[in-house]
View 1: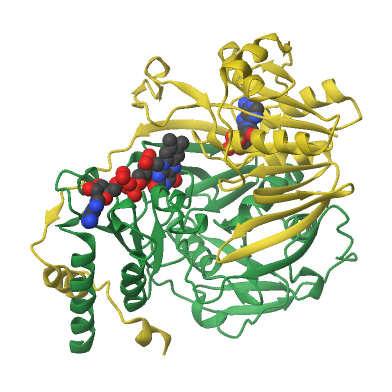
View 2: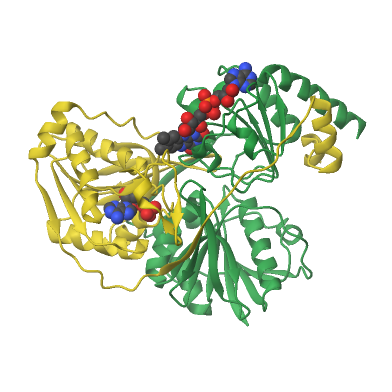
Length: 255
Length: 326
Ligand SMILES: Cc1cc2nc3c(=O)[nH]c(=O)nc-3n(C[C@H](O)[C@H](O)[C@H](O)COP(=O)(O)OP(=O)(O)OC[C@H]3O[C@@H](n4cnc5c(N)ncnc54)[C@H](O)[C@@H]3O)c2cc1C
Ligand SMILES: Nc1ncnc2c1ncn2[C@@H]1O[C@H](COP(=O)(O)O)[C@@H](O)[C@H]1O
């Protein structure tokens, strides 16, 4: 079986995010692998362990510095990596670049399973995975929390509002990983050493499609509020109940 | 006049409240700009009796009342939306922010060659989706996106309820399927299993959330009690989820759900930026924490410094008294 994983680089949310001239101040942020992509990669590595003779290939479209997250993926256990050096401005362009990169590497023999993260934690668009699947002409399933692979396909589960939905997809298919799918492994020193020896190739693919959406502005958000400290709960209840009319008995509402 | 289509989602034959809210919010937007005519598309068998009362403004609901559409399938649903969009020449398609919309909308964006936006849309005077704002970078910033294509598909972030809109003539029309609906070879949804009796935090008007400060799985019983009294739902921080006290479905924040209740009560939650990423659109925020310097108080409207269990048990008493008086 062949598995491919698409990973991207995002600013570490723990770093202070500042903005200069309407764009994020990259000099102050620490770039990390998108947390959801770690679940995606971990799952690919687990599937590889289950099916002998499998390979895991990772793809990333980004600036040369994104090679760092690919090295991390190789250290975690991926077999080879491809960096598509381009700077797409929207999910549509990203999906196209990844589609072309995957076709260039696999030609018509698509990998059995492609893994993505549910969304990237920078812009949280969550659009690349299903767009990519659609461009490749394969089925996709987003927000996966459990996978059971068999010879013919995979049985998947995802959370929906108030429940769980399950489905079966034949190969080849693309899934996007949700938190809870697994607990990603830590990289070992040995893994890092081995990762350095694994192939990391660069693919030059140019962006041909105009973007579908344009980022037209970005402003820091201040969420600071002045907190009014209350002495006790009765004050709170009176306030919420009378002044804000937020309280209503659940029993009354159902009638 | 522009023509908009709002997708109405049903699960187990019940039209989702989130979809009805989305309809009402699009009506409000349309009324504020040059005006647009709205239609709805409801896929699958569903009870439509109460819709007339809940849905504001005027519009026609096309109901694809077919058993094969009872369960969501990406390809099956994409096809009927595509057919409706192209047949009737809609310029914009709206979804409520749900798991289904996030799965389906990118596929439609490709098939319709339409811009996919999410968040809070703004319409131009000509009634076009001019831009859409949403929080980015863990809600430390807000970005606005403009569509580059003539057609826009928008996933509306959950938000506060709208003012009432005049009109209210909702008509229902069957939407006949042109092809066999059940040839979704790509993908078969086998089943859905709903957890019964639990309110979903993404749709709740009031959310009572607990963090590490709640102390144990059992400690959440008090939160359940307060939520039940208020007709709300219980949420959790990642720490509480990772400790196994709550299921992941309850997690609020960057790697969990985004909620937009009118009232959010944070109990024993410190207020980490990744948690706050999920409550950016909440109305009134109340924090209960034993540490007067906890960062959660910086983003709260009201705060009570105290031990969470003591505060909550007195709070549930006070709510009971209040509701009795009322
Ligand atoms: C990539 C990434 C993604 C993340 N995503 C999320 C996410 O989606 N959601 C999320 O919530 N977090 C997320 N986190 C984790 C986040 O950084 C915090 O670690 C987490 O929110 C802390 O949870 P907490 O507030 O419950 O616990 P703590 O930070 O430990 O806070 C506990 C609070 O309870 C108070 N307390 C203790 N005892 C009592 C008591 N008896 N009575 C009253 N108060 C008490 C304390 O004063 C403290 O303020 C993420 C982190 C990373 C790195
Ligand atoms: N530049 C990129 N390179 C490789 N994969 C990407 C890139 N951008 C997004 N992805 C994949 O698509 C997922 C969702 O991203 P997004 O649609 O941007 O929220 C990510 O978790 C990755 O798996």
